[in-house]
Amino acid sequence: MITFEEALKLVDDNVSVLGKTEACLGDMAGCYLAENVVAPFPSPQFDNSAVDGYGVKTSDLSSASDKTPKELKLVTAIAAGAPSQLQINVGEAVKIFTGARVPSSCEAVVMREYCREENGSVLIECGAQQGENIRRTGDEYKKGETVLESGIKATPPVIALLASLGHVKFPVFKKPVVTLVVTGDELVEPGQPLKDGQIYDSNAYGLTAALSALGISECKSVVARDTREETRKCFEQALSESDVVISSGGVSVGDHDYVKETLEALGVTTVFWRIAMKPGKPVYFGVIDAKDGKRKYVFGLPGNPVSVLVTFHQIVKPALRKMAGGNFCGNSTLKVTAGAALKKRPGRLDFVRGMLSRGENGEPTAIPTRGQESHMLSGLAKAQVMLHFDRDLEKLSPGDPVDVTFISWHD
Ligand code: AMP
Ligand code: MG
Figure 1: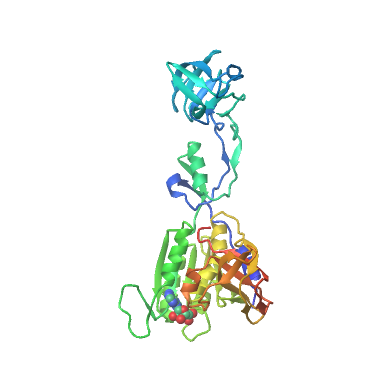
Figure 2: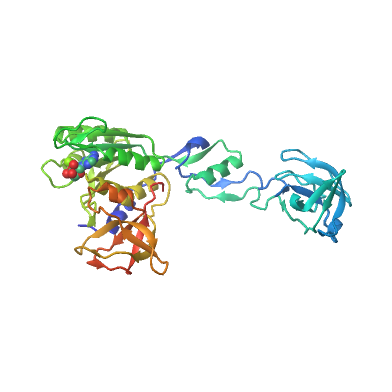
């Protein structure tokens, strides 16, 4: 059986970026930019005030203090958005608001908090340095400068930055179209009555939510009953309609597990099946190149609800990220201290779900949540991290160093 690291490498080797499109700013959350962002103008575009205050000549204030305020003649007020070519002379000041253009004759803006207005003048209680509280043209970037590199995720600040440059839309990489195939005779839609032995389908909802958190909203979900015919019909349809098919259940070695044989019968090439990890051992990954040359990907995830979401987080997410134009980095890890004793058989990596807290000396410590079996969603629902209980280890003791990945569903 391959290791988790080998599986990740195989996914990385087989997955490629899907292609480019354009997205409006309102629809691009979660996309990755497909071109560099080049500034069409400098930022700031014009010298403007960082504060509400008074534009002055610094030499006028060389002796100003709270005991000996300097009186300057107030010539006008300039609000944000107002054009102004006005100039001031020695002995004069201009009232100015945050973001308003600062006339070139003003050498500094004194904060309003140090000033008092009286009879058409302003009394200023402090000195000022050249350029104080003036945001200079091009301070952040110059016209023609590359502000962001292609491949960055369209996070809220990235979208705001595109808007600040006047873009309505921007080239992005395509997000994958995903179909979920949820297998199992025992599954009932939440809200319907349960008969003896039946359970509610939670995987379709967990996976849909996980995809939606990544900005993948184009996702259909179908339930395949445990027959060869229905499993085949569902996968055939799903493969024809999507870039990625993610299934749950039916991928182990049970008598009713038809996923792997069905996919192979449909021409999908198995890249791997089964990884030395827990939860998630029976996970399957395959690829098929369609007639039009487009490659499609299938992730056969296990049925147990915790296994589904752990394998999605650890294996599927990096693949989706790469297809969508981001980096294939596995999820980043952090070294912390184990907060409890753990035991296992060597030979397989365990992803133990845990919470972070502080140890005796304030060190970050990971404590396993209650409910570690792969059907116990409550233990995952409460967890903030997954502890990597390494393949070759048999035990972890409190105080031992351990790697954790943050469970962030959004990236
Ligand atoms: P399987 O791999 O199909 O044998 O499923 C393993 C376990 O996961 C069984 O206990 C199933 O009942 C459970 N399971 C499978 N699919 C789902 C689902 N969609 N929602 C909740 N539990 C499921
Ligand atoms: Mg099943």
